[in-house]
Image: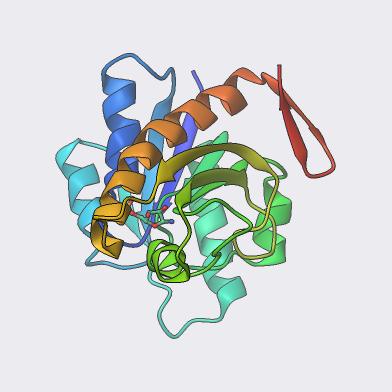
Length: 199
Ligand code: GRF
């Protein structure tokens, strides 16, 4: 059984979707620890309700490397095999990324490389794209940048606003993240440059 470490900063719906899939037997993994850099993250409370190890490692006002060292130590202490960023609003230091080569995943609510950064759904909506979606990718030291594991598309409807679009993208995120975790945990892929080939 592989151990997941979840890093989050807020709502935690992607974390909950992963936890639900594990509980339903659809994903063979264990959530060893949930770590938030914010004490008030609703996702933390949800983790506690589920009886999971839930830690706060505050980041505010601290040098990135100091904070990252503490997070990495906690992930190691819980023998984490794969780290899932799930609404974790911190850029990882290059040092952090080097500690877990190709063992850190992120989900982003756009079809990367379009619309990296904050409010990706609104960026896409305001740009006027007809299709958006979500991306699960390996994490490197650049924001929303590493090799792409999978993407799911979501059409932008004439009746949409940025909120309704975000809701439909989120539904796909909740499916996509567990799919990508399964692929990585089962080792059914190879990486060639930026290309992730599924076996
Ligand atoms: C999601 O849209 C995710 O793609 C982005 O941050 C949001 C987190 O939402 N990285 P939640 O906390 O998982 O509900």
